[in-house]
Structure formats: C-alpha cells, structure tokens
Image 1 (cartoon, rainbow, N blue to C red):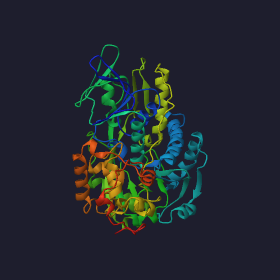
Image 2 (cartoon, helix red, strand yellow):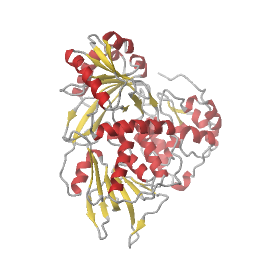
Image 3 (cartoon, helix red, strand yellow):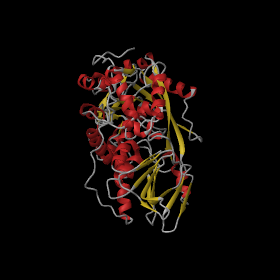
Image 4 (cartoon, rainbow, N blue to C red):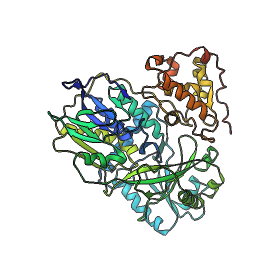
Length: 516
C-alpha cells in the first residue's frame, strides 16, 4: 500500500521516484521524524515493514508520558525526554491525544529502596525536574490507600502522566501524510545499494525505494538495517515485557501511577491506571532471541501475580480482562544511538527504549538538526495543513456514544457495535475510511478500542471482522469522503455521507451505562 503525497519526488530516468529522505520504521519515532521533515520543502517516504503504523514496539508499552526525572543526567536521552515531554504535551492538547495528569509515586518497601530516594530526587534535579518530594509511609498511603503492607516511604513525581500510545502514533503518521509524506506499508527493507549520483536504493519485496538520504528508525530491526549500510556497532536484544490488564472496576484502587524504586537489580514492576479506564500490572523483563515472540507465558503471569500480591493485594481480587506482551529494543549502550554518517546520507536512530514514546518528537527535531548539519537544505513550509483532530479513546473525555449533538447529526455514533468498550458504528466506519485507515481488525482495535474490553471480541469480533472485510472489498473510489462539521470536529476522520440504513439506525441514549 502507498499513500501518494502532495509533493512529488524527483523521478529518475525511467520515471522511478527519488525521495529527498526515506524514514525506515513506522513506530512513534519514525512517524515523528517523517512528520517533522515533511514540514519542510522536502519529499519524504515513510517506509514500514508491517501492514500498519505502530504495529511493533510502539503498540505495547506502559503508555506513560515521562518527565525524564530518572534518566541519566547529561545523556542525550535525558535531554530529549525532557524536551519531548513539552512537545508531546502541547501536541496532545492540539490534536486530542488523550492524556491524564495522574502523577506518580515511587514506593520504597525496604531499607535499600528508602535510602535510594534522596539520590533519585537529586537525579531529578540534575535533569531539570524540581518537583519531586520525599514523603513518609503515611503520606504514601494517603495517595494510594490500597497498597499492601510494608510501605516505608515514597517519592512523588507530580507530572508523570498516562497517554494513549496508539493515538499518538496514528496522529503523527496522519500528520506526516497530510504534510505530503508518502506512506509505504508492507515494505520490509531486505537490501541496500547505491546507484550513480549517490542515490540510495532500499530493496523491499514490494519494490525498491530510492532516496538521497535515509533515516533508520526501525526499532527492533534497527541493527539489521544498520548492517545493510555496512556497520556493525550494536545488536538489539528483544526484551519481552508481559503485562496484565485489570477490569475497569479496579480503577479506583489505582488513582495514580505506582512506580518501583529502581535498584542495581533493575526497575521492577509498576501498577498504573490506563487511559481506557483499566489498571495495568507489569512489566516483566526477559531477554529473548526471537524478535517476534510477543506471546505471554505462564511464568510471566506467576511472576506478576506474585509481585501484585505484595504491591496491592486487593487488585488481585479484581478480574483480569486481558494480557499482552511487548518487545523493547535493548542494546548494550547506556544512551540513545543517534548518529549521522559523515556524508550525511544515512542517520541511525537506534537503541530507543520505552522512553521513545515521550522523546519521539524531540528525536525528530534532533534528526532534523543533524541532517541540516550535513548540508541538507531545510526550508520550512509556509503552507502546512492543520494537524488532525484525533478521536477520543480516553475514558476521561467525552466519547461519541455520550455526545447527544454528534448522535443527532449522525445516528451512526449512537449505534453501539462493541458494548464492552462502547464503540460505535460511526467510529468504526471512520477508522476504515481515514487518511491512514485501519486495514485489519487489530488496526481497528488500536483506532477505536473495539474488541478491547471484557469479552476481548467474543461478542463483537465477528461483526468487526465483517466490516473490515467489506471495507477491504471497496475501491478507493467508493470511499469518497464527506465530513459533517460536527463529526469532523469530534473525530478528525473523514466520514461518508450517511446512507439510508445509517440514518434509520436508532440512537442510543447519550451516557448509557457500560454493560458488564
């Protein structure tokens, strides 16, 4: 699949397009870089191996918007996380990415952890974050009353927040496409070669991609791509993190993020609320060799339940509604690996840990500046479109099924398809016809929350899959967008003119209680 940009890349003699920059990797970091570069007079290709953006590491993390309080002072990561927090916070406000300013508390359970708190506060100060405060065990319990026995003290981090990583990735990708970037899905890079004139050719099963500059933001595959360019400077170890997701009824137990105190043995397990109203327990940390091993394990569950029983015994009385595992790109390097080749034709963006969610937009600025330093002409565009206004997937905001005005304008937003998560026909329709559309049921899950609730798609899965299949059978010409003012403001997706069947659909009352 390719999405044609507004700006046209220069053709070769045989008509093959040559992009100014190709960005390899459609996760948060790659999409942020493509968006940033497409804000200049450049032609940009976003090259993704999978069939959707955000389908790798970016889709399965702890979804925390970090202040960077605990990063290594003076590191590139510390600087970019701090800057990224500012950029992403402002961007989320502008685009509607759900964010909840819950705050966090690091909880000390023994003498070693209690003794580590002053050093962590000093580290936060060295990173420019001055709002951490050491508190007593009694104060910790006031913040999180349902913690287990044995709390010794804590450190507050008032500005740690939870965010929707799915919407973040999609917003950046959509913005990049709006700015003229070409999105090339199903384009895994298998070989790299150089043609006459210094043009780099990325060979893929879907055809070659020609570019004058290449940015490698391939996440778990960044070392493989780096070797295709002739380097051997790092190896990615896939590190699996398994998590358990508890029912929304457990949310009152966890009003804020509960972080472990990092020690020489590692960072440990956290308990956190989610944007979707659930509670999350995890992650584990297990180095693997298989870069596709995202399955959960009996050992992982046992480990998490053991940790959870000590952290918050009452949480284990609630129902687990889902479990998942993500792979982080672990490297034997203490910092991000971001380097430009001397000739400026290749930039490595590797070793980006889970903080890449927060630092992605700052990494994009950093890569832009590296490219400028190598002589790439960067002229900011004066005709940039408005960024997308994303659908709200967060429980703290108004969802379409609760919006009486939206339902009156288009009854499809009052027709619930997924009752666990209250996802409507209108939302599914919009996601299938968006600028970066859902192409699979999993893509729909990340765009709408359909099949993400208690039943995990048992009741709505067949209908969701049928709608996906029907949308896939339509031609692009059958998807002419029509954007009612109310719907466009609420969803940011191009929506079709409601047909007779949609107009006749009964509207559900706004604010209907969630079915259990």
